[in-house]
Image (cartoon, rainbow, N blue to C red; front, side, top):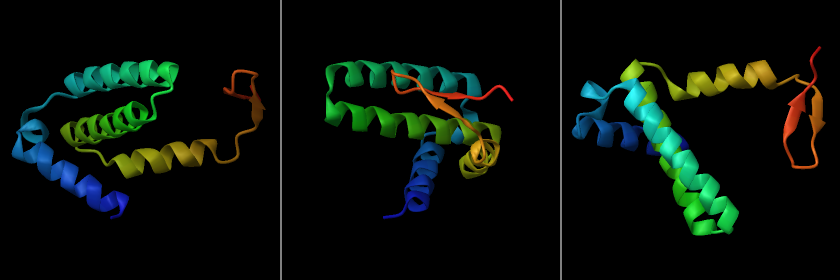
Amino acid sequence: MSYSKYEMLTLQWGTDRGIVQHGRPIGQAIKTLEEVTELLDAINRRDMPEIKDAVGDIVVTLIMCCATLDIDLTECLAGAYWQIKDRKGFLTAEGVFVKDKA
């Protein structure tokens, strides 16, 4: 199944539970932060099933956050891509990309 199909199913899930209509963006942002913390813990433990679960949960919270703001997650991703597509920089020893200051 495609990403867009899962996004639509997730939006329906959120609508069925009142998140889309009555949720608050700050609540979804807090939930995202909780899920990111779970991802960090799973990465530190090298627990691949938990890593996958946390990544999926993060995407769900981002979809719900966007829905409460009436914005499209794909548009957000597209905007970010167009900002970074020509970005130059370097990868640190820790594996973090650092953009050039230019």
